[in-house]
Image 1 (cartoon, rainbow, N blue to C red):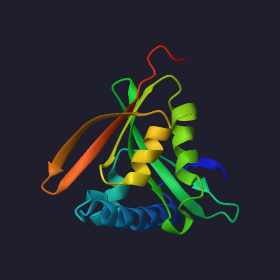
Image 2: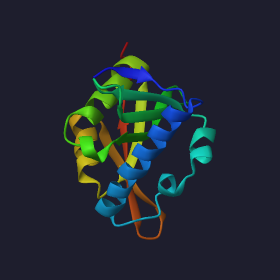
Image 3: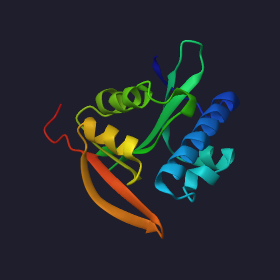
Amino acid sequence: MPILPLDLTDDATAAAVHRIGRAAYAVEAQLIGFDGIPALGESLAQMRAHGLNWVGAVSGDGELAGFLAWEEQGGGIGIDRLCVDPARFRRGIASRLLRHAVTDLSPGLDVTVTTGASNHPAVTLYTRMGFTRGRDFSPAPGLTMASFRLSRAGAS
């Protein structure tokens, strides 16, 4: 399953990203017991307006299976979104996207990401991929987020 750049100016691509994101965030909302995830209520236009870089995992039938969005942050990258179509969960797609971010998008750079602290599949993924858990924080009542960093000082 190739990982390809996504062009959100293309209507079909943007619609697929938006659909998958909403479906994936609905699952996360259930896992963490919080339905106020900002991306869950985001319109297509709002999603497109973010200054993010996007890549997607494309299945053999040409369908978008998942995506990762990131931005450059202080000499590294911050992963803003990592979403997989719930119909394709547990097939290694999130791992492939994250591995691509770490090896191809940011070789030698630190990578940061946050997720709901009760999102055990995501917490397990980041830990398994070598990220170190930082401080948990609460940006809204009833929500605890976990922060992760993959530090690569001296890597090349």
